Image 1 (cartoon, protein in one colour):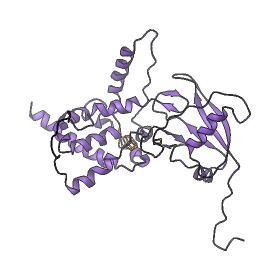
Image 2: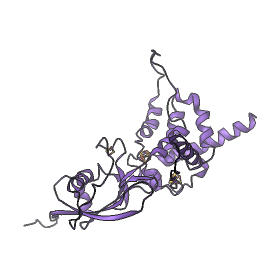
Image 3: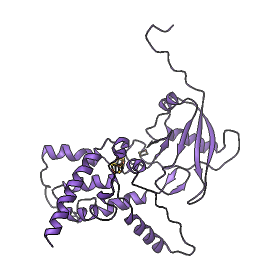
Image 4: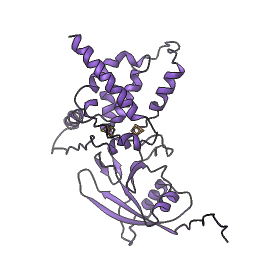
Length: 285
Ligand code: SF4
Ligand code: SF4
Ligand code: FES
């Protein structure tokens, strides 16, 4: 008997229905496919995908190639397993099936992110995300293996401001949600070499919006005592084509970031820094 006021324990299904948006290769059409796996307690979406791959057949028994997906750390650190699950962009390693079936007992729906080229099924090509980090030189420019002694001290206040930004795992959720970050997908021309294809991609990426993750990382490294040595180079990228001016301030990015990075605070800081940089550049001419 259930005590008055307490909730009845939720009944778990014996089977999980999964609808997957598949694509057999780059540039090919997408199609939906239904799968069914046995329910087990404490599964995440990766375990569901492992079962789907092992079965390699649809819910109506048709033999199919195993569904492809990407993953690495399995603890929400590498960002590689990011996909759209029941309409929400998130990591499949931390998406728990018990929670998903509570919200929608009928089905789990899996789609690749829509802002990146699909390589196969749920695997996408995040190279533009990393390219944009290179555009803003999101690193501390220290090279060599010689002993340079202890680094400069960083105040407690600066640590508190910068630590949250350092948790970015390059997952792409902020880009998936951003209306200004639109998909760029180039088709390889017949006979095109790797070099010229990569160059075309790089040129196309350089025209597109840089994204909240890159803006935030630029602010992180501009605040670093050594990283700030190339602050102007980062500001040059942020004030150039596809830079901070392209941000429409819709704030979708901050709402979906799984690491709760204060992206809109970074964007506001970048906007102020860009104004100062542009004035300084104008008067330094
Ligand atoms: S605030 Fe800027 S970066 Fe964030 S979602 Fe909006 S347009 Fe994109
Ligand atoms: S800022 Fe957040 S949502 Fe964007 S790539 Fe980094 S961790 Fe992912
Ligand atoms: S596998 Fe690394 S974040 Fe999910």
